Amino acid sequence: MRLISQNTMSQYSTNFLLLPIPEYPVLDCVPNKIIKLVVLGGSNVGKTGALYSRKFTIDGEQISLQVQDTPFVSLEDDNDSICCQEQINRSIYWADGFVFVYSITDYDSYRVIRPLYQHIRKIHPNANIPLLLMANKGDLLRARQVSSREGLQLANELGGTYCEVSARENCEGVHEAFQQLCQEVGRMIGSCNGEKRRGLHLIRPKSPNMQDLKRRLKQALSSKGKSATTL
Image (cartoon, rainbow, N blue to C red; front, side, top):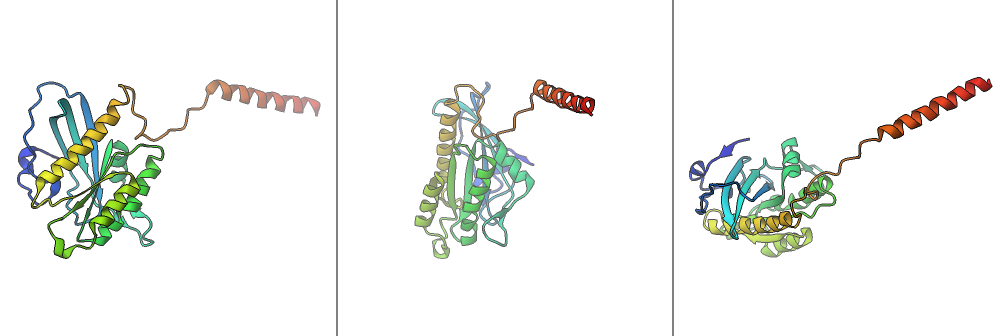
């Protein structure tokens, strides 16, 4: 996992997460909120597989944003499930919000999104998942394979927001989309009123009650003792 600074970002202009980021006031104090986003999608959609971190203000509030751009996922042979690395599962468990990315020039990358969402639901079955569906390479209209209508329909189906961007020509569109998702996640975190967020965490089985186990064992031993006496 690589941590890429803002200076390093300026060297990579083709990836939507590596575009120059607008200047925000530098914080001298601890941010009020930490927002963790994970970027998911297929191959050749504009992803890097790296970790980015940035502090800024949004709506007058101090925010620490962490973005995990994961390795790409691919469809299994049955086309109904995905093949992904364990690192991706850990990132899904870690995240507060999700960015699904596909390329409008690659229909297969669009087809990855639905089973990818279903995979997340297996990890977070009861979660309220803030989600952004981002259609990249919006400048390559002549090579389009996925219509804007298809993208919007899928976003509505998954309960997320939709945007079509061109990382090459309009980086502001990418920044605005991420900002809107941060605002949504921030509201979700704020609604917890400082309590531990449960929505995006696995529901773990309760630990067994040791007193109850001891009582049952004692009853079992007592029953065996009575049976032996009878014989």
